[in-house]
Length: 218
Image (cartoon, rainbow, N blue to C red; front, side, top):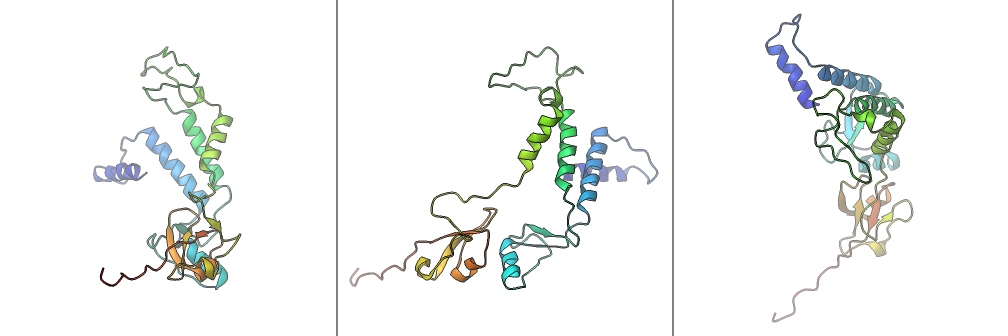
């Protein structure tokens, strides 16, 4: 999308406000799709936070909000709630574009699907998305692709905070445990008390023990 905006901005260099620049239809359609999605979403975010701060807000009543996405802040905050049909609008636009999408020249299906290449790639009869999936099938595909994914930390030993909270016996020699964030984008060592505030997170013992000092004469 940044490339699209850059191309549109470059037209300002050679055209007056009332000028008539040559623009490809695909760019116009992409801009319209973007405007429709932004309109459905409402105003832009007013700040950013993360899951740990949300946990603090829920349990303590206060938490930090940042002006950018630093500090691991991947949760956007809006002055007004997003409309529930945002995802539906995105899927609808994706389906419409997919059905008209020209299959790549090196299209070579397998798994029992054959393609006899009856036409040249430049032919107007070259297959498009609708030759592969119906609108209903494409909609189902995008619904599954864009659906939220339930994060699952990899490996054994992770315990959901909602199922059991760490105890003193689970702490390492520094009084810490491993904590995995809901989106699996961060694993950190935190205190047992911090983990108790983090609903929707996972934790596990670090297994770290204080080493014994070197023996005399070593």
